[in-house]
Image 1 (cartoon, rainbow, N blue to C red):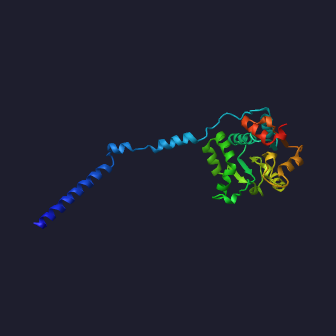
Image 2: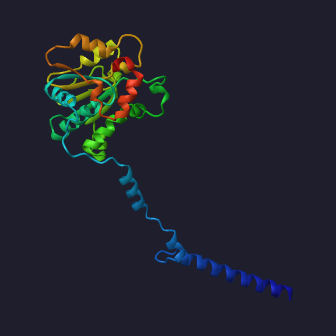
Image 3: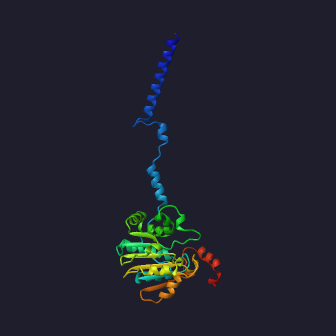
Length: 271
């Protein structure tokens, strides 16, 4: 009698297990969907598209237009000179104008390559303390120019050009041995952080009919000792093919607050 009860119990258990397994199979079988399944479906493609739309910078298809008379003279100087120095306070559009002109020249086929460089100098930090390879280490130093190029060319085009060497971002120290030819547009930013030796090395890379722009703010140097930008301007001002453009405080276009902040930090220059 006890054996018969145990056999019956095992049969019921197997039957119940088979029914439960079949029920689970029906729930997960392709083509079958329950109300619970429908409630938790998320369209990841739509979500990804929304994120891209929200965070990708819109392209500016219109040609570059100067916002101030000083910017107009600066843009004209870059177009007409082999070497142009742009010096002045932050927010005057030095970097934006240079980056936008470089993007226009690349898009129109006037040049084959853009080189963006700057000295790897920051307050209390060095490239070695940042994670990743050289490109990842240098990326934070050149992000501002990447934003400009994204706006002028589109993020996809910029990514393609970076992968194929049409746009090169490299620390100033890696410019030694290079030659800037007529199909290259070179921008040296934050040049107030160069030494005279570094500036000499950079300027002697210039080849025939190349386009080189050197930007900086002499009041915001992060290095001690002689300044390469000030030294170069003193030596080269008036040389044929070289133009020095000086932005003033009234040329600040970033915001009125920036101008007021600079007035507070540099009151002697404001008077």
